Each structure stands twice: as structure tokens, then as C-alpha cells.
Length: 278
Image (cartoon, rainbow, N blue to C red; front, side, top):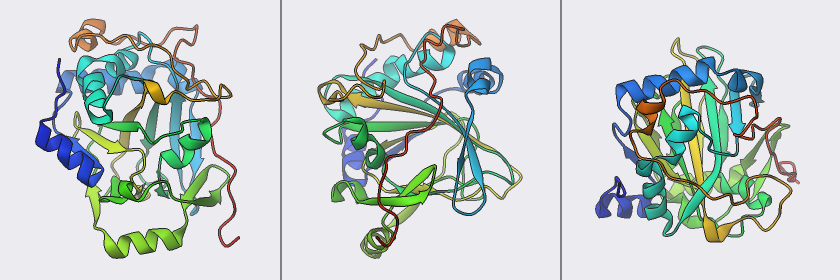
């Protein structure tokens, strides 16, 4: 299947740093992915809590390979891989996937950051990565959806400072200057929508103080020729075998095997950076 975005939509991504594609996964596919996130023992056993700076926390699970589970197959579908390749301008491999589970009333905030602010330290020399957030629940302002500073990816990689032991943030002075010049937007999405965003785009999300949970599944791709130059983390290049889009429904509720083919992470990667004000 070719890229699901039109040339005009790709141009919008390049200009703004993101694009929201509606209804990429239908109701039954989204339900399969949601059920897998809720019932897979591998997901459950690898849940981590990412604390924010105000007493909240987001439950996350991270894995670095796209296996034969229904969510591994999702990351390998033609509609996702072909689109990532069109956005990045070359062949890609699966870099990382992540469940972010912001529970009702308790879900934590993510302060302003760039994904490349982390991934640069994994050995990616160039910002040739894209994140693809699949909404499993309705994501809106009330339950802490993503916020973007439009066009901020064109600023390049920004300095990050330490916020908590589990989070770094862009230097607040840089954020304030960016917001004075650029528009801040909310990336509201319905289940099955996919938010594609550049690895240098400034983004954050509020705590979830609503009575509605906000679960998302984020797949990240790296361009093959941007393979990590280090092997200290296992997000280096492994060939990605694409599957047809019908593979999700054909697999049904297929969960990860006990052999950990997905390479679940036991802890989040948080680069050592200076403290704010230093």
C-alpha cells in the first residue's frame, strides 16, 4: 500500500512538524490493539511509571522490536511503514514502540521536550525519525492530549535540562521564546486516528484530571541510513518485514510470546543533562 498521506499533507507535515490522519485504523482494529494493551502479560509485567514534576505519573511500557503480536504487526503494516518512509525520505526500521496510559484523575504530565532530545544520546546522528501516535481512546484537552508548538522542529535540537529522575525538559527559556513566535496547538484525536510528528517537534501534555482515561500507542521509526553508531541500547537497525494491512484482523488478539521477541525495556532511557539554572 502506498503512503496514506497526499503530497499536500506531507508538505503540511514538513511545514508544521505534524499531521493528524483520521480513521487510519477502523473500530475493530483499534479494539484489538486496546484489548492487547490491557490483557497482554508482557505489557503488564513491563509497566513503568513515569513521574512528572507535580506528583502525577503516567504508566508506560516500552519495547524495541516489532514482533508477531497484533501490536507488532500493526507497526509492520504497509500503511504505517510506507507512510513513515514517505515522511522520512527513505527506508525505515522499527525504533521503538510505547504504550502511554494516562489514567483518569491520576495521569501525569509530560513537560515540553523533543524525542530527539533523548534519541540523540542513543547514537542517532541525524533527526531522521518520526513518531506515530495511534489514539486508542479519545484524546482531547480535558484528558491531557498532546500539545505541539507548530514549526518548532525547524529550530533543530534544543538543550534539555533535568526535571525529575524520569523526565528531562527543554530549557524553559527556549520554550518561552518559541511560544512567543510560534503557535501552540492541541492534537485532539479520536480512536483509530494517527498523529505523525517529527522527532524535533516541541511537544508536551497536561495531567489527566478528567474522569476519562487516555491511552495511546506510539510507534517510532528511524531511517535505515541513520542507524545508531552505538550498540549500548538495542534500538539499532534490525530489518523490518512489512505485512499487508489485513494482518491485524487476521491475527486477532495475538499477544506477545514468552520469548520476549519484542525486547521490552526494564527502565526508561533518560540522558544525563544539566539541572535547570546551571
